[in-house]
Image: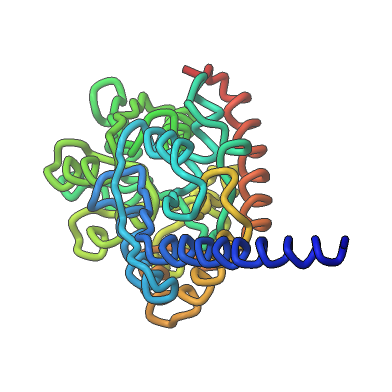
Length: 329
């Protein structure tokens, strides 16, 4: 009798299980064909935007779905980070960001609206880079030391320096440079590097600090001049430009990073799938060469390695920010 009941139960459940499998596979297939939105926290035309579009074009072939870059500028990437936190954790929304939004903002803003460690999961890292100090074409200075002398010759030794976002690594660099060389430098924050570059090209501001990718194309064209870079060694893309360490300003050698992040709760299989696709893209000679010429040092980091890089970088800057006396706004 019991065997008969089990037989009946099996006959009832087997079709239901098959139906569930069909539904599950159907949903997975539908999900697999859904476009991926790759958010960028800065306007079109800047260095981060250019990096995102380079990778998105190749990732769509590796992932087999459209990868669409969506610019969500504002507050140094803060709005994009908040949008990522509120996004579905299914791999359809990703965030390409550098150190500022992920590591620095939570240290300088009281209520950023997100907690990087709790709300995001690292997908993969793909490069480190250095920040650079550049002068506009209308500035007579041809070197960093000439820029210092030029500012000192102005009334009161005053000068304005553009930065892509307030309370950012570039702002702290401006502060350190001003103190080191006894200049009265004021940071002029922009909504990303693109509007800052527009003002530099129009000679509306004499200098700016940002990532090498922000400046390098206009530097090569002779429209602006990169006069110094951070980091422990000169950059392959800028062999004639000295480091700040060479110029006597050390202690800022920890390199910023670029990575891709997903909302917390995104399945590990999805994280691994995107990470493996990114690794294949970075191995392409044309991609590696293009990113290197933009001033990046290409190097793949898996999810765990990117998480470690993020934590280490955050610890370094937490101390620098505390020692500077900066109060979170």
